[in-house]
Length: 324
Length: 210
Image (cartoon, rainbow over all chains, first blue to last red; front, side):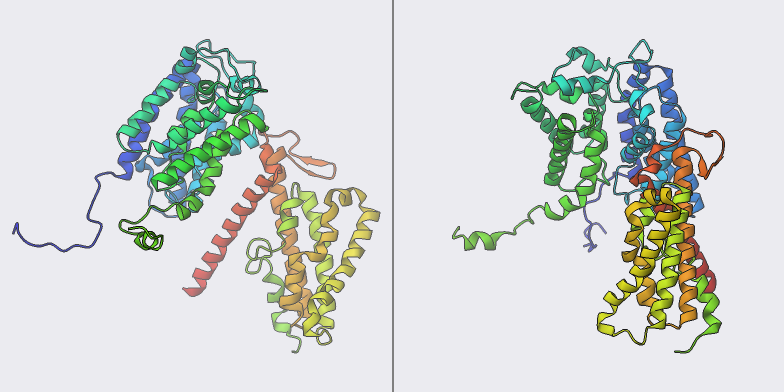
């Protein structure tokens, strides 16, 4: 029996990864950021996260029941959408905002296009863009000071940083997340922990966050200081704002990012460039949402043109050039 | 082609579901997205289109045997432009406020795809009465569509629906979503309604097959 020749069609290399397993890993990776957000901005943040996740899961189940599709809430993808959306919201938004946002993300961005794997935009970010356009006051003013939990009256640190090229926050404050901001974006250490976990577990490709944060840091170093070149603060650029959570958790979404390694690098660089342009010369203080959404739209184009060389191909060209 | 009285009812009714100009054929998208920020705008835009469509359909159907095939498009444009100018002047005189809101979209009815579509696809090859019913059906369906989109956008975007001086409900019941009054809100509303009508069409088709 043992020496029988088996002839089977491809694929021959199989992976033990499942959709459920990958999604669960992402949920685990987001936990540090969620916990940090709750510690920094108070119990209300946990409530927002809870409402958002519950609304996402419930919308997925209800919609799939309504159109008589198989209910797939146990693959955790709706949980991630709800979690990611909540982490990008200001800590003082009314609770109906995450509820509506998560339902919008699941039903209008994901399910109507065919469910997981068929959406052309990152659902959480598309919902955030929708909320920002629908209730701009809540989405840009409901900030909270960390640890004291009182309402922050100043603009977000990023707006000042974009205008002057410098920030009053120390490196330690920025790493621990002790600044006003969205629930899950401030604590860089927690995000880094989750991101590295995903890279080590081979869930996400390091090229997207590297390309994104690298481009943003270098670009800010060159252009970030008004009136001078090569004097910007690269660390402030990637630590103050949503670039970290965006680069590790949103731009790396499988469905809406390129499949080839080189394409992923381009995706990261593209996100970094658009974020930089919006921050420094655009009308909004933060450009992470729109940058990633825009690169989501370009992803099919990248996949079409950035194709790896087939093994053994390209000899004709070399011969014509007079090479070996 | 003789007048076909049997299909008069069908010619009228088909504009609402099967050949719904906005949701099934996706023609006339410019005014559909541009002027539907409230219910009343949608209504008056629709009325203007009903008048132009009926006028031009009847005219084209009457002259369909005289219009040379090669130059029919320019001829259609002249026949459509006539009622458009009438509507424009009447609106300027009696509804100046509405005219200033609808603005360029009233003269633009000349190149409205619904009017062209009905002229080319129906009036040019069908008798007068049928063409008139076709125009009324399509026009009224278009008006209903605009009022529906406008009503939904106005309600979600401002929390209220205003018809003249009557506002309902008196105070908004929820915090209005400003996005619904902007172009993205128009696209979202249009997309959702289009999807719903397609579900209806698919269900009806299935029942007919069964």
